[in-house]
Length: 369
Image 1: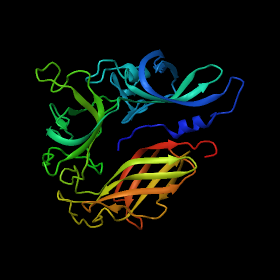
Image 2: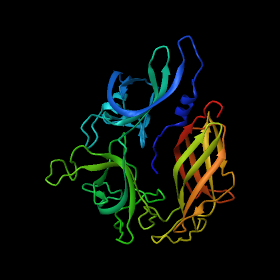
Image 3: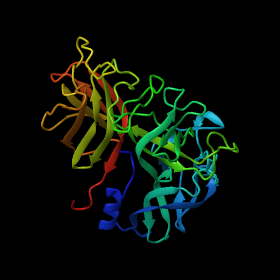
């Protein structure tokens, strides 16, 4: 449901054996480490050393730093919005709302890198961080939303009569839009969530549970801890809450690509509809989520390749019928770092909807795999 980096195939390759050939300086073996970040010591603004479960890990200017919603190379510095955050600002900069330790210290990181058998050092190629893995699924029991994304002053959503959910606004881990089950952005000012005892509104949210009482404001007599989220979605399709129901839309749940193997693109579509989910009947636009075809493109080494589903399957209509679910599968030889996905008429033509620059989960096959 949410993007989460688990034991990657890159790590599986490491477990299969040596990643590169032996040299006079020893051999490099691919490693992966997931655990709490206890320290970060800077050497320069773009290099230093992490301590993860007491293991020292070197980071350099080529190390990628990513979170579920962003990465250091595209994140503006809070002190200068015209340039990228330094590694130090990313790792131990401003304290997230409700946390006590600076930056990502004390949070969970996943390090992918190389261990050199001669130097005994681990050098990270990527550091993924999501602060914590606090997830809640259940029933929306209370809410107050003054802004479309329910992120105005005092806005909140309460789950299971437990903690409130409030969005994380830090640029390193900024909350995405509230979505319905089709991952379509919602406008929470149109009406309430609704829901009854017999027909509840369900949700799934991911973030971190605050150390301190921060809602509605720190130090207030009625202050309480909160789940500061970066992902929150409803468990149902909600055409009555979709921000732009009158146009066709496509969302991408994920693009997974295995080098020398398979490309899989999954997500949802919806046709132009009214708040009841009925089609609006716009000329040249789909009437249901089961029409047309999905097209994906990836660029590798400057060459863009187009992919269609191996079975030419259209999306599968959902409930209501203006929604649809798709899964494109095709064999590939190489993978890009991002892809574009289009929903278009079955015989081609101008796309009805598109989603661009979707990050690709790149997976390497183990030797002999």
